[in-house]
Length: 372
Ligand SMILES: [Zn+2]
Image (cartoon, rainbow, N blue to C red):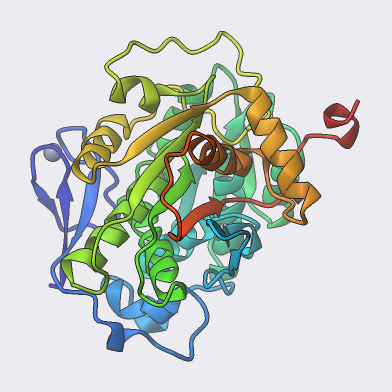
């Protein structure tokens, strides 16, 4: 085997790719046993599957694709490049995870005559719904009772069945995970193969920069799948000598939803009674992967920035006003870059990358709210 799926806490290995949690309750991780080799890249493939070789648990004949990945890396200024994850098939970076996860599991789920369940009313729900329909799998997407907006419509247009659950976000998760005949829970937050799909983003950034290292990479952080997956990808590249050093990873949170920011500083965090940030994709006040995020971010000497609401709005306005129409949640990462740039923290002549995670077409924000 070229990989193993191991518990992040007790180290126990699982052989079942459908497992999303160790028997000790802690999250699982994919550990690769082979190196990244540049000559292993499929040069004529312009999706994440140009790195197919480095996802050894996916059979080539099982690949489910909508053309995800190989998104543009656009130079915005001398100092910063934007990685346009908003241009993925369903409009967000989550497609990397959905494509890898469903490609890995489709055969097992189909053979069992089963269907998949997921809990998300946002980008992940839409993405899993799309890949399930592409795969010919039935999907049940569990959402909060009060759900509305463009992402919920998108989930339904893809043909997924939606199940509304009252009583808060954790109740939605519980219902999605509840055992039922033929049901396979593939929740994006816990499932190690979803998170592992994010490695492809690190590979792309490195390759698109000509295998030169980025100085800093800014990612918005909520549940942590993007941050953890991208760290894993860069670590794989460094360990394999495909790039010289690890970029400084900068985790970007809103001031309102900043559990990682607080934990990294050993401060206690009390979320506001109601989250009103315009960055409405960043809502994990108590993420199940928090311990793992802290551990990894410390290991790679990363940083975390918490961004004030007015700075998010300014960054969103600047991005859209220069042609980059992204979700306000993506603007959090650009705002964090600007804060560090303004404070003189960034070195000259170095390439920094801001990951613009999702499209502005899905935002509930209206023009007159921003410009009144
Ligand atoms: Zn364990």
